[in-house]
Image (tube, rainbow, N blue to C red):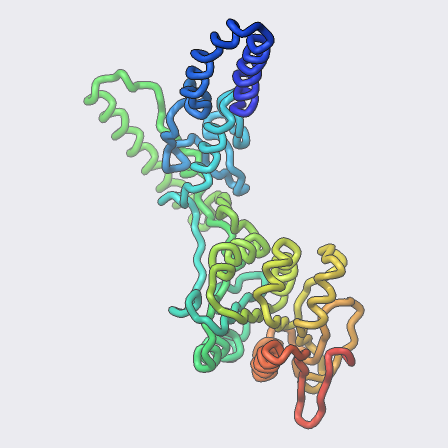
Length: 394
């Protein structure tokens, strides 16, 4: 280690000086050349004497690492996790290598995901709205495919939320929490070039390759004729740092939302999206509290007990969140909750997939009141016609 090396070199020098200084006057004169020598020694340069240069690869393949089908970083040859102490007694070099690996971006062949953002999502100084859908087959910008297919785009997609948000001066970020992996054919994933025959003449090797391709073509044709509906054996390659909705929410927060200029950030999270938001709060509590003004949940499936959300998180949710749940009661009517977190009110429908669309006008009103309350240091309230519901009553 560089620190240990510094101690081992530096300590004996000072001990020798102390021993010399114990001598008489003549001995004191002899210390002058030694002091001159010490003054010219650069300890940092001394520690670097046997240190390799900080010349590191810029790709994962260069480091001989790759992510496996579980999204875990493993060494290509050994299959072992990342080893920090790659070179013994060279802590500084190991640290620089570790930092260089962390700077490596996604490779061309690495699975990737995406999100949608308005042009001013990161630069809007006032307001930013973040939309998170639930679990299942839905993708970015959708609430429920059933509604899209059987009813209309307004109820089944996030388009109305996006349009109104833009009209009211919000920047918008649309998360994509269900795209956690890509599927590839297992045969292609495990296909490796044969190592034997590398010393064969080029002509002979080309003939062998041609015969092999023709044989495979005939076999594939036979298999397709014998069983035309046979499904290919697939495997999942997880997307780095986005292997679950919870990971995705944290990743987008760290790389985008946390960097946004907006003074007020608002979340709309449906179903499992609410659970993902609570997990984000657990992992980034201080940051979320400082940046997020209000959270609208629609029939959220989060559970503060199972997710082990702390008391401070539960208290913040009581003051800054509202959950519009499926209920036959009129819109915004208070609904009793067994959990000590955010207030629950009726979404005006008993259909889970419709809760976001039916609570659409109330959510924007809630955000407007929350923003106004923040500027005047007051708590927001929910209103429905002439009936006013205060948070403490919920």
